Amino acid sequence: MRVSNKVIEEVVSEVAGPDVLLLIEYLKNKKNISEFKIAEKIGKEVNTTRNMLYRLYDANLVSFIRRKDKKKGWYIYYWTFNGKRITHLLKKLNEKKLDRLQQRLDREQAGQFYACKNNCCRLEFDKATDFEFKCPECGSLIDQEDNTQTIVKIKKEVEEMKKQMKK
Ligand SMILES: [Zn+2]
Image (tube, rainbow, N blue to C red; front, top):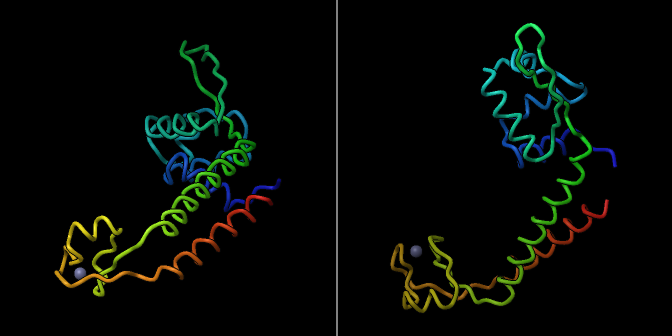
């Protein structure tokens, strides 16, 4: 599967935070770049850069080799973007999203919802009983809501997600 830049951005920012995007942008088509060079290129402190790299490493999105600097005697880490992981992570993220949608759908299909006409609240039956069918925000009576449209909407989202996952 060919992964578009948009997908890379989406996955990376979701698993490691949107601030690392500029690092990935720089590292994407390169190999074994020292953290000092990365820091310089993206205009961040070395510590900040390392923090970004560790977050990416946690998600297996980068790998490193280390070499001893002969003059200084310490180790320098050289980083490579692990683009192959994207597809796997994307699959996982989509599965999670699908799972959440499915759960929401189940809740909508199983429950009765009560909503305030002023849009301040939306409660399940039990909660609505607790408040004696009065809105806890504005005190108006709350009515049972017809959630057919919501269900249709979520079902559509589920279908679209499934379709996308088959690609
Ligand atoms: Zn209200």
